Image 1 (cartoon, rainbow, N blue to C red):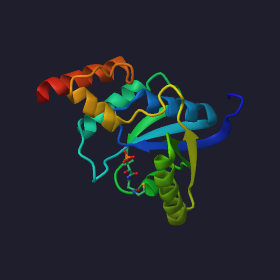
Image 2: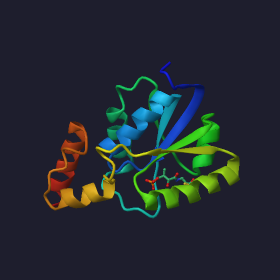
Image 3: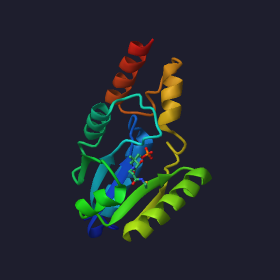
Image 4: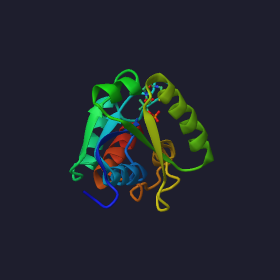
Length: 167
Ligand code: PNS
């Protein structure tokens, strides 16, 4: 147990992870140092168009967190609160980069708490990767920019392959 680990509390880090970035990994790693176990829940947001299909996002995310002992990856279908209940997770962890993230996460956290009583913990994004988003990363990659600073080597290769196929 690390200094500040909350014993026996399983947390969920949900997202689309299209693809997983170093910003996501920062939040997941810090959640894993606070909570005894973290489930990274990879889902589909019906309002989003994805670069990577569901199985690819799941696999890239699993590979990216493989070295974190107390972290595992699972697919999420349906409501996040139901996923948390099924996996006996007591806390949702989300990263916030700036004010608009906070406004959105505040609304989601209040909804989820009202639906099921589950609490959400918001972690401020780390300085190094604070303002990365998967959507910006996809946009600049499609236009030929190097995104290797923001993702793992495996994700970078997958992005390059995807961009090459769509050219
Ligand atoms: O932040 P993202 O990438 O849009 O998150 C995707 C996902 C699937 C994790 C999110 O949309 C989600 O939790 N969907 C489940 C449906 C749900 O519970 N929605 C209401 C509260 S978030």
